[in-house]
Length: 220
Image 1 (cartoon, rainbow, N blue to C red):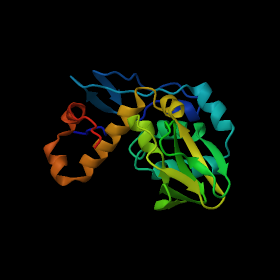
Image 2 (cartoon, helix red, strand yellow):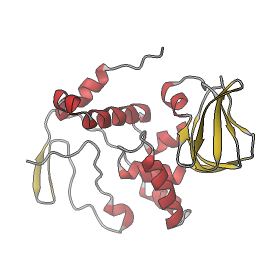
Image 3 (cartoon, rainbow, N blue to C red):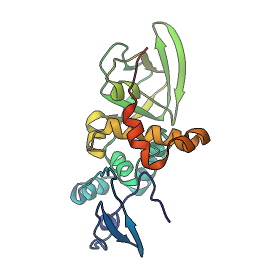
Image 4 (cartoon, rainbow, N blue to C red):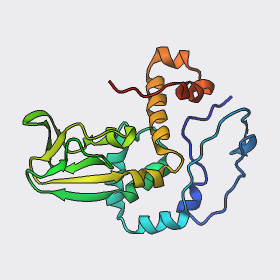
């Protein structure tokens, strides 16, 4: 028997081509590409995207721009396990912002609403005058504040002219409408379990979401 993965997409052909849906999708029984699939007592989480909104945003980006954004988003462990539709929606929603040398991008102690992915440039993460680390192209920062409702833990200052892609809470909520925080945290949990032989055998696929809900985030 075939077991469908944790994140799958369907009806995506209707986004790229003018086609009608070839199958009816249900939570109890359906037929997909010749396979009978039966899902019983299974909690289904579906993220839907509107074709009109999708096309309007896609038209504003060139294929090269979309690929660059997708590659960056896909390289972030936070988003890696998400479905392709959610990733592409994020790519169309994020905004590029340029910072001058020595400009503060994040101020320690403020409330965070945005995650940043560095498109080009170099930044310094600091607490007071002490530098914690440097980040460069392809790296990201600011994720903790938008996932855990905590204040910014350090200053982030551009060392050179820096261009960042900004992803706001609003962008995440639009791309992943059904409680994006839980979806992302579950994605991380599922990804971690799959990479650990011990936990992969201990936590069966059918029970993982139930097990995940038993965990809680603690700050120390």
